[in-house]
Length: 479
Length: 97
Image (tube, rainbow over all chains, first blue to last red; front, side):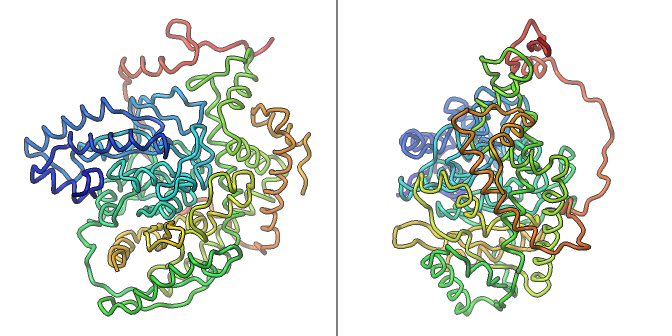
């Protein structure tokens, strides 16, 4: 029999409902797995064992009283760049090593209101800066399928924790691929929702015009269940849209016609791993030859794709440098013990409390936004961003959804790209453009390469097309 | 494009970031590489293209400006986060020598 920690949300819900086990049993199974594996994988920065067991006991009482909802008693983990009430949230940077938020992200409050059990906080690239989880000041996260490889990033700890059965699901954040790319590397499902679909209140802000918060899980159905809970208007985040939240999980078997676009720019780039491409193309062939689906494929072109990364690496560091100004060692967080005047409280606390990548981004952003350079960088990037959005608009005038590989390659070795900044940035080449355009995208596992490493397929949809996106992803996930 | 060490130090000062002396050369090289790469945007013709400043289409999102009382418990939690304090007051070093 499978361990309880290996269950999906659906499986755990049914088991709790049928009194096959309790939330305390389920929570203990996850905590034992975390304790057994954390020294090797390092997916958790904080583990709240005692509190998790209290929450599990309370959930069992709710179930006993007939108050079970979908997430009642289900143990989960949260990326450490998301604030959790009275529970240490470091953002994976030492400047917040002792930070215990007196408030909580709206999406986490919604999930916990159902009685879900918070196990702990996941390691990540500090403040979401990275594609390998090596920019954490708490050490890298190993890929559960091969401990010498990276987990991907920035939500590497969340992806590894789900893939390694240390939690039932995880909540993370995606600014330019931080949910989809590690989901691909670790062989799980991860959704970046449309910008504005889920509230970002309580998410440590990175690039405010791109940041999203989304779910990571073992199946598309679990992702749909979570989106139903997470999505919706929040007065505390003025960018949230008022569009009604569909019953995502109810429509997953709906047979509808899909017109799918295959953007040529995502299958033919320098540095593309042949085996990765082949595995994604084989999956596409399987969809084509499956007589149960009404799917039409079309070749499309997104000519501005190659500008996605340069646009991303102007807009994001610029907004980063502004957002991270709040971390200064003055009101909260860690203040340098070496500082004895105001300038040095700022400079030394930030110098000691940020890892190299955070410093690089703040410097790129500060330079890009400085007087005389704004037009050449930030303004120019915002114009090219318009052209990238028009690319997608043109494609979605012809097709419902796009299929691409999530990453040009599978998980690389820990340390392999660490000092090559541009090589690391290019790891996000297939996930950045849709983020720049504010579109939803999901990564689902479609196989493993000859090194036993997971390959992910990305499905991108127009804004607020999550219902169709999840429906299609669910139909193809098991063929 | 080369960002010289002096420029890196100037940017770091503006951004209130202390850099380790032995890392400045590394940042100079890395930032130069990044700017060389992002400068490829200059080849894109953006004549007449409007900047994207937001993607939701939402405009003038407002709410009532209501005063919500904070609890003493929350106040104490915030005070507990101060790196240094004197009673309930936040303590900082002098701005000027």
